[in-house]
Length: 121
Image (tube, rainbow, N blue to C red; front, side, top):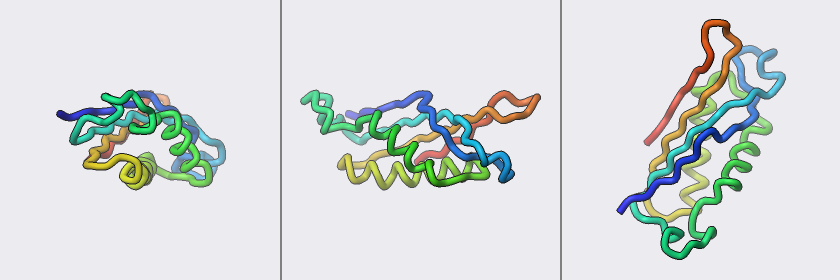
């Protein structure tokens, strides 16, 4: 049996943009994260938060990761967040975890409402 935790529209404030001027003020990006487990998580049976991933803590950790960093491209942001998740989750959950991460931003372009980039196992 497999299980999956899906986080939709996890919003972060990130210094992101091609120019230094764009990176001056943080902008909102929206994340979709799918964590796939090779087994049923113990929390499904014992109803214990300590046996799963607290998504409030994870959201705070991701925001803190971005606090003192800036990124020119969503591709670089996605890769660094993906690496952060891989390391953090491997310490929390035993077994194989597959990660899907998609970042969406709203660029300041008249002809483009949203741009997204995804990375996964």
